[in-house]
Image (cartoon, rainbow, N blue to C red):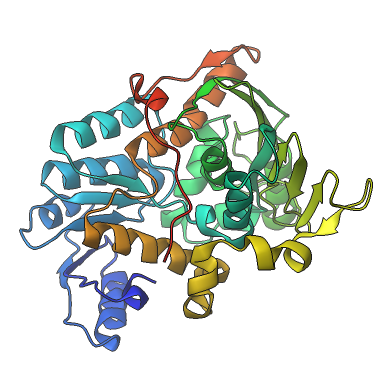
Length: 384
């Protein structure tokens, strides 16, 4: 998707698996661009890549535990950093990202693609135009059957399973929470204040291992810390509540459980996009969101880029995200999401872990902006 945006040169590629570097190099040359340099000497070779003097941005899509180290190395070397989600897996890493970005003056952007999905952007547009009234509540999450992926037969890629073995927490909060945070102006006039989390028992991943690999398999003998369903309740400084759900262990259809509720109306995305607006919708009846409201409330980015995004990753949102990243960096504009957003969203993992481990006690969010959230302007409705 970065290649499709135009205005991008990919000068270097790093991976511990050389065949993946070769495949990525071919993608670049097939697009008519020069072959990127290869970095595949080992897990730390990204540091050598970051020292190049011809890079503006370093983008990491590694296992989670390398996201912060790669971003920090990039920023210290004078490059902007972009990372797959989550940006960090501990509070210490969240602070390291914030402090490094502030010290170096480099952007650190968590590439939360769900911020750019059609319904989420349309909802943000509605919120900014006041259709839903004052927001009071939201619901979101990551509900995705990943049992087969966690037990990938290639045991060298079982890094995701290791997190399920070691941690009982919301391991992947940002896909659902990112778009909700934008609607609620988090870090821009509002902030996450405190959190309470609770976990169900851990059973489904073990049952899957027994049924798939047998009761005597190494998979069936694993001690899984991660509860099947982790539920967190966040309260914001402005008094809104957010329910965040994490479920990657049970058999179920995919959902991000997206819901935004205000004093005048409510939007719900799953299983089908629906809306209810007081005084406009039929009394006590849902309306079809896309059929009845898209003409009026389609976000300008989707309206302008929908055809260009056709065929790109995850229904088009990956292209629109890449487009905005490149657009902002080439023009010297602040990105739609910054290091404070990356830290606040990623912090949910350790905070939920602390709450669950302490009988669901309340845990306060750090203020990564050190008070600046009260003065920062909300994200506007950007144009293509």
